[in-house]
Length: 308
Ligand code: CP
Ligand code: NVA
Image 1 (cartoon, helix red, strand yellow):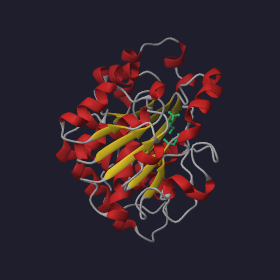
Image 2 (cartoon, rainbow, N blue to C red):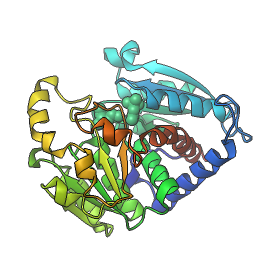
Image 3 (cartoon, protein in one colour):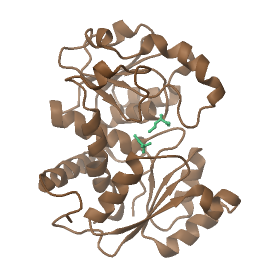
């Protein structure tokens, strides 16, 4: 049994295997109706709990559809409607759920909730986003990059904006998949030093560049995310917008990257804030492929967790 808690906590060869498996499963389904079952049904007879303590569109739907395509069943649970949201401990919740379901995916706030869940659960636990990381998203992003441009190893990725949870998982992936990452954003919103250090230890070139135009020079991929994440206080919104405005990904900024540089955004986006519609809907944008690939990547993650 494997938990999928974070990219840097997962073996690099296993991560590569998941991306290849995701690609194979995607190819095998080409042109088929969304609800058609996969030829293989590795989750037949399995029940998966999907717990959400924060809103979600992509994570909720892609996990639910993915489990069903593989022959399993899901139950989608809202944290606030569970006893978990009314004082029951994470440890007790994990032990109880382990008696009913075969796997747990949880989207939550502090990452200690996720780690405690995994410590007390007898079934695999998957990180569906915490305040600190979002590994399933970056598995989809690696799959998406490689579909369009071939191996991501050795490429230059530029993260523009807030050094947030999605950025953290990109840094983890840099170390594990062997690409370089330049962060461009205000010093107040730098990614965690620990995560930059981990990627550097694995041999990735991790650069912090305050000038967005310099940062994107030679970029193969430019990535943006919302300026205010779900866990950020709304009262910080105006200050964050003021800090982050120079890092908006627009056509002018993209024109300083490589001509074929891709643009990614995990979505949901605030159009005309962190990125313009001209870029989001432009020829180098792969944002909807990223969203689709959540489905394929997570199916591979779930199979790895269950060893099926
Ligand atoms: N990208 C992502 O995780 O989207 P949701 O918040 O809609 O799940
Ligand atoms: N950084 C964003 C990602 C949403 C998928 C958030 O945490 O709100």
